[in-house]
Length: 79
Image (cartoon, rainbow, N blue to C red; front, side):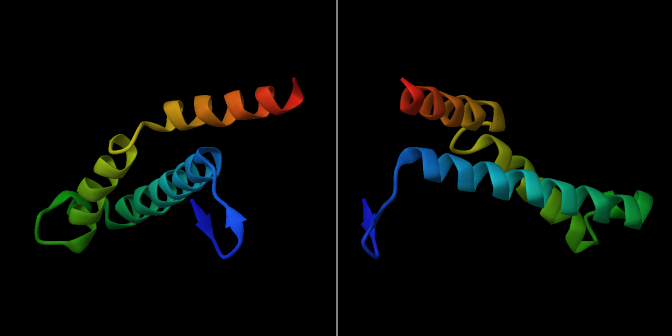
């Protein structure tokens, strides 16, 4: 796939997905802590964000799989 003259590889996509999943996880977990017990009630938007975050970690591959793809690419480049 080419975007703006720059070739995107699966490694770049794995890096982006890992960064987004880890960053949003940290942000949503902090927000849940700020809301306390209310953060888990369906009445609050943060609860939906927490549920959606769980899907982000699983859909398209877990963070561990993304790390494996990235490390494999790094070792292939060095060989």
